[in-house]
Amino acid sequence: MAALVLFGGGGDLAMRMLLPSLYFLEHDGLLPDDLKIIGAARSDESRDEYLAKVRAAVEGKAEADDAWSDAAWGRLAGRLDYLAVDATDPESLKPLKDRVGDGPTTSFLAVSPSLYGRIVTALKAAGLAGEHDRVVLEKPVGRDLETFREIDDAVAHAFSENQVFRIDHYLGKETVQNLIALRFGNTVFEPLWNNLSIDHVQITVGETVGVGDRWPYYDEYGALRDMLQNHMLQLLCLVAMEPPADLDPDSVRNEKVKVLRSLRPITPDEAERVTVRGQYVGGVVEGEPVSGYDEERGQDSDTETFVAIRADIDNWRWAGVPFFMRTGKRLPEKRTEIVIQFKPVPHSIFDHGDRGALAANRMVIELQPEEDISLSVMNKRPGLEQRMQLQPIRMSLSWGQNDRDARPPRRRIAYERLLLDALAGDSTLFVRRDEAEQAWKWVDEVSDAWSEGKVRPQTYAAGTWGPEAATALLASTGREWNTGHG
Ligand SMILES: NC(=O)C1=CN([C@@H]2O[C@H](COP(=O)(O)OP(=O)(O)OC[C@H]3O[C@@H](n4cnc5c(N)ncnc54)[C@H](OP(=O)(O)O)[C@@H]3O)[C@@H](O)[C@H]2O)C=CC1
Ligand SMILES: O=C1O[C@H](COP(=O)(O)O)[C@@H](O)[C@H](O)[C@H]1O
Image 1 (cartoon, protein in one colour):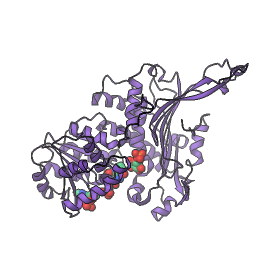
Image 2 (tube, protein in one colour):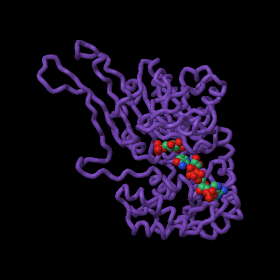
Image 3 (tube, protein in one colour):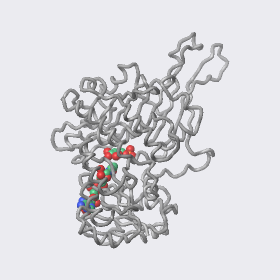
Image 4 (cartoon, protein in one colour):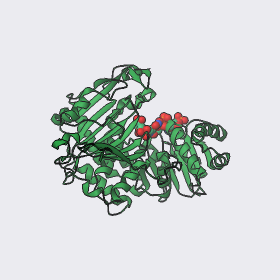
């Protein structure tokens, strides 16, 4: 019998994401029949108490999606168990080893990354790192390249690379996978996907939430390490990578590593020109007054809650095409999008040759709040005017839907895909060691440059799109951030 052990099974990630995901998979009949699921944390609680907490966490989400079913809950509850363990202590793990039996065990570490090294060592000592077992690690693994390597060396001592699943939940998002389908399942886009046709790329991950109670973690990491090192660089890789030979995990990850290796290093002198750090002060978000980061933190801090960066990829395909990335907390909207800005027409035959009257084509790959891929193209405005009038129109690919009247499929939690893949041993959507190393290497150069003190966080009012300098980052190159929706 196979087992999934959720270390940190009572924590925020487990309750908000992992257990609801498992419920939805159960509801849809996608979990392996013989799978046991065990929540494991230090708190001393009974199975019944744990089940009650899980049910409370799952039921509201399932009802909101019209997917609550007593039968599905009954099946999930039948598999669920709870065991109080200190995962860093092999002795404490012995009863767990007895509980999971001899089948393959997947250990999901939903605990502080500072415990990963000790936990994997304890798993090995307790016999939970056999050749058929797997370990799933949440991001961030480490705080820089050096600490990543320290942790990962401990992981490599217990598990071989094909047993290690480093999660980046953005890779489980439907639109991110659809980006792969769009690029490599069609012939029309690929010939244009290079510096001959593309002017620049923008990646925005805007959040309305503040840091709140998470500041003990966040203050040590900041936006650069919390979001850019992982989620945003993964998105950049998927946009920029060469076509892999197939969808084999290593084929895809080899291509992503090549992109990361081609990122131009950001020197301390360059950092001032191509990076922006921000920190929110009090303001208004979605109509509500909110406090600044320092007030939440209770004292002054230099941690950035916003970052904007221009990245350049030094290879044939992307030479001269800047990739602008920005992410921040307490921005006006929760919006995640990738904008592919095509070049303008070389010469306009409309409007007496005024090229500016023609909006250059733009593809917007929207991940949140809606999932969509759209392309803006110029179109004739209907009418009998003598001089042809053009207007931009937005062609939406409204993914997955040929029948416009059909109800769209339920929007899955990214962890549903990733949990299924980890259980099946498919690591395509997980981050390989060398990928994480390259990403840390690039990010370390940025943070080293920052620690020389030249780029300090500039304040921005909560509810705005970050410091003025983020606008200037594009404006200085004659470009601007996408403000519209599509
Ligand atoms: N929350 C989120 O939205 C996100 C979280 N993550 C990552 O997920 C991981 C977990 O985060 P989060 O859920 O927020 O953290 P929490 O602090 O909410 O939960 C941590 C859990 O770990 C348990 N725990 C702590 N020490 C041990 C131990 N020695 N043995 C067994 N269990 C232990 C705690 O329970 P007890 O005290 O009972 O032991 C608790 O259940 C982190 O790596 C985080 O960076 C990543 C992306 C988003
Ligand atoms: O990993 C993280 O991601 C969330 C944002 O995830 P999303 O799926 O809602 O876009 C972010 O809030 C958090 O700080 C970070 O650790």
